[in-house]
Image 1 (cartoon, rainbow, N blue to C red):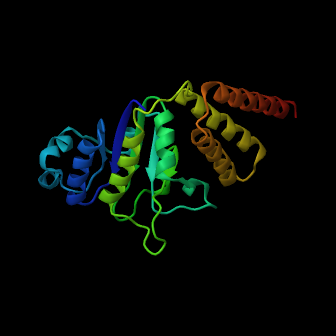
Image 2 (cartoon, helix red, strand yellow):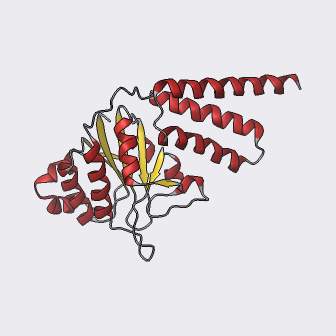
Image 3 (cartoon, one colour):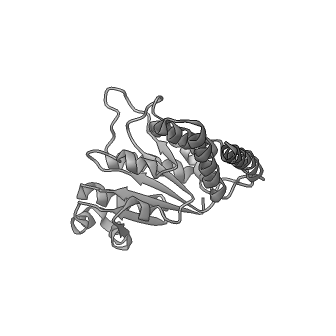
Length: 236
């Protein structure tokens, strides 16, 4: 990870927005993006203290897609996780930090709205989902507190030696997902299940922190399998 981008989606509270601006300074976050904030940025500056300039320098976008442009890895966050829902299959902050450390380029941490978090369509735009372990009686953390925990975990791992591993180009991971989706659509009639398979390959590629050679081998197998299936369909 060369750069860390914090993306706040639809932030509703000026206090949270101001306090998070302080966290951006605390944990060396290089980029701050705001997606359609409803909180007053002017009011938020009162709570940002000496970090008010971070709010003034923030890039404001209309859509999450725009805020994720140019990133190699995006980590969406939610208090809702599920073992049976691929989209909500989550990893821990510690796992996310290790994966981010091994990822070249810019890593985005995406935090949702205080009231409803991130929508399913927004979650689909991210590479992985991260959730913070908390009491099942009240697992929902305040936005500022959750952001602080996640930024701290990411901060701890930055600069740690990677040894001799050569991480894959993010484009390779994207191609792995592309061919997995193509194969799934050819073999699985249920469109929803085919999409889940494609998402699973994306998550597997990111979670397992493959090196470049491993990623290339997986891509070689999937691309050839896809082309073979396409040719067999043409003969029918």
